[in-house]
Length: 336
Image 1 (cartoon, rainbow, N blue to C red):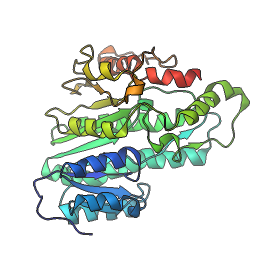
Image 2 (image 1 turned 90 degrees about the vertical axis):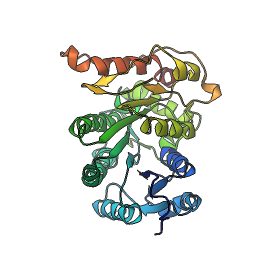
Image 3 (image 1 turned 45 degrees about the vertical axis):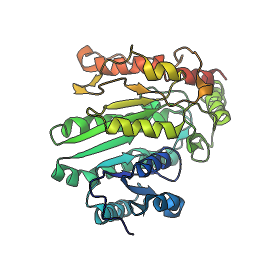
């Protein structure tokens, strides 16, 4: 493990799950900017090309976020190379599809270990030095599924809802400590999430064939054809993190890239429990040209009502925006 000593003024990004998808594209973008990167993957050989491109500004670390010993070792390697971590990106995780009744406890628990408990452990590992420096940023890659539950992905949504709640609490706890928190909520993107990384129930039930079963089949059929471009998403995430007022929530994707990028209807800053979430549009588009199409709100998207309107005004505004934009692209999967 070696790292350049001549770039101490550049930010240090620690990114989990870098072998494919968002993690790999984000690590690539960070390195291309001349910044320093800790590129984490269960198999460090899979990110060797990224480290080589870093020319001494990047290191690879072995990291399975469900293993406490590997978290401890990876953080120690990062501090040995770069002294501190400016940005932690919790990206590692995977999906599991089943109706609630079809869920297998071992699979559900394994997903929670990676998607939620692993992310929480990483946050706990970096916070002490971030507090000491009074500076840092935690970026949790959640999902649109962390805002709206859909048939067949209830357990996956539960992991993302949990991470959303943890992040909102953390944001309030660290507000006066110089530590920022952002939840990135992607819609459909061309990553391995719906491909080799995806797990599905081994015990489908016929009564759910028209709901969760149909949606599982649609997701499989559309794998690799999703509208979202993860490379463009990486650029938007970097822009958000480096902005003067980073958003608390960043929804990525949508069927109409023109409206997502320029819509003034959604440029009002949205707060979450009193925390300013964005100084500009809360959602940015990362779609390719073929995805520019009209649509309607997802028929399964229903806003949750809260008895305390003051507490949930921001969450309601965010959910309405998601229904109006990002979830349009999911309606086709539901109807397939």
